[in-house]
Length: 96
Image 1 (cartoon, helix red, strand yellow):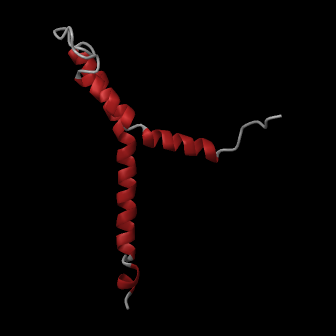
Image 2: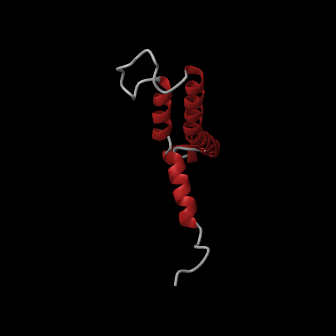
Image 3: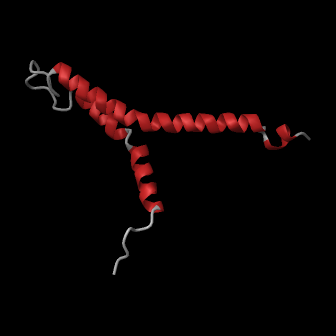
């Protein structure tokens, strides 16, 4: 039985999978800042989080608010990265 049939992946396929995983990790980290920037740009160009013409509209309406929420929902990779970085570093000074 060949290596391809026994383990399902050859060396080239493993490299492609590793490259795809690296690209996916990069895209996951880019999403939150991009949505935050889109919220800021929308807020600056639209004049606020809620349009003035909609006096009784929900405060959660509007594109800037949607982009802020999407930025918060996509912040998990950043939180995970920060948590693992602080977990891997020893304390700078011992507690007494």
